[in-house]
Length: 409
Image (cartoon, rainbow, N blue to C red):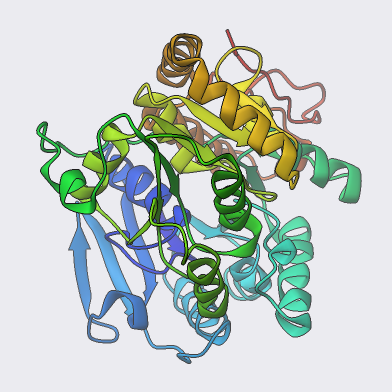
């Protein structure tokens, strides 16, 4: 198959979960014998515009854009759609609902290409966007529903959302866990930061309001756990004022450390040295940071939003009430005072991730969806697809619906 990918900032990945998802999926597709062209933003890749490079066999096409908040994604997605519509692709895959606004362009100019959209989350709910950007994202969501031949969602609650809101069926293909890089077993970088292995808590993610690192900072400040520190790992994403607010919030707390963005061995070292990982978000799709912490046997606490519930319940981690400071403090105190019970939960979580959330499974399911779309001229929303086995299920009179099954044991 000849595949085009639109919507991610860069390859290899820098900041952002979508880029890391793509970096796992598409090299595997190339290894399976397919051709993948990956349209990126020149402002993120730092590559010459329109110059083609490769990453693990994926052809990178860097496009110019308007380097201003929100407009860069808009302009490069539009250009990507125009280029892809002329490229003779079997599948054109949009990642995120904003770029999917231009699925209409592909449908008009390249009607033989199959359009796939992956919704990684309801981006219009994010606090950083103003009214105009929110309208653009909502329009992209509606375009996904109307023009996509196949609609992928990364969590069960997103599947429910599209059915309840639009009566549109979707395919549930969850994200998977990537392995951390090899890291220094003596934890020298952690010691440089003033972190003692297994005696610090980690928050990892973009410093944006919906991830609620401010709630965790307040909970840590209120609890003041003896001998423990808090490491806040990540940078702002069009949210510099919020990042400044976080540092002001923690300025009188010497046990709270902002590491900035970490990658590769340094990130792996800080994560492996942590005694607890906390994700207090009010909004997530299927968080890679949580999946990867679980895979690494790191005890985890998270807010009780549906994606976190699906990953941690019933016996794989600890949940607290979303946006509730007292609940966060209470569960944090319990976790720090019960390390043996947390270790058992962490081992359960690791086994669960290894069985249910691998990139091999996700790649197989995505390719099977592509093949189903290409093989059948009918509207994919009328075709039943088993999202775990990746195999087409039976249909009656060529008309049925997608079904979601899962193995959570």
